[in-house]
Length: 454
Image 1 (spheres, rainbow, N blue to C red):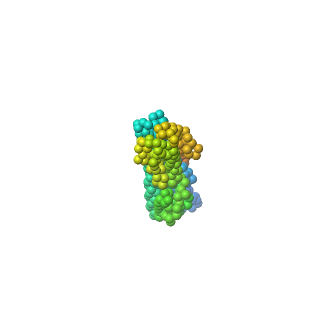
Image 2 (image 1 turned 120 degrees about the horizontal axis):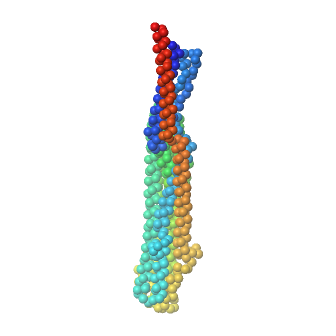
Image 3 (image 1 turned 120 degrees about the vertical axis):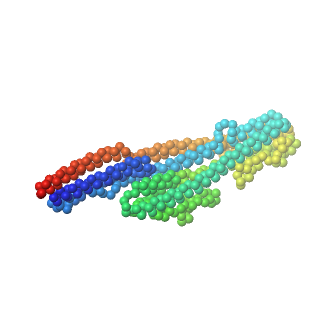
């Protein structure tokens, strides 16, 4: 009887383990679409078996739940996400710069300068015509406005990058608090087994964080994680989140860790890295080039007119253009209060002539900045921007494919396959049926023995 009883106990335990396995499979299936949920497996282990000792009944028992999460694959996804966040933000930012620097069509700085040169050519044909002189002034104002508009758009892009930077820092801090709160819950429930819900929430937060900034994580024995960003800057340690802060110093946007250390130079990737590059490097560079072009245009025109004669046969008493170099030549470029009569269309020593008007008309062909014409300098700016934009577009396309590949591989290794889980259910069903048959046989044997004993 002792052997039969032990066998019945062992079989009942096996049926309970199979029921647990079925429960785990069912949980996997219903969470198949839960973000960052990974497959759980109910492992089993053989119990000690000694047929010579009644208490060693053998059979199986439930081992701890096994998580399908692979740390290497998770890190690979995070790295790809950070790279994609950088290239995606860079592409978006450069598209904004491209819109502010048109190179085709009847708009923007090149078109405005060409119209000004054209009005100067018309003035050369009729140097004493008030209508021709007024047209030059009108085209000069249009050219100044085109520089002003481009500078304003650059200012808007710069301010927008700063606003997005502040938002990105706040998002990072919010995710840090969320991860710290999950760590706290993980510690409190660490003795109660695997919490698949907390685990999926944690890795969803870490994946969102990777889009904003690169990070590394270390998993502790109690299930919590330590998160470092931009190398070795602590963001989350246990239940404590260490907030990042931001400020503007000397026109540069800077990020500081919780200790007040400047970590700006360490941030190279993620959306935060791209926004810092846009705010601190890209926009200042293009703004400086735009100011150089505006100064070159204004100085060249003013220089030519200063060497000529106005309608009264005397040198002009004021320039055509004015600007404030400290506040930005492009943003402040404007036409002075000059009148049509004060416009020096004639060359020195030839009152009533058109030599100066001809010089203005030929300005489009004259090297003015770094051996380039004014239009050529603008074209070089646009060409460099186009090259950077195409490079960013290609990198972003590649990054998107790499993110997809990393996620696909992670899903194949760690994710839930409904077909595989269904196959497991069939396997467990057969095991349960077999255990049930064994239990039935053992019951019959027990009944037979009781009948014999009676």
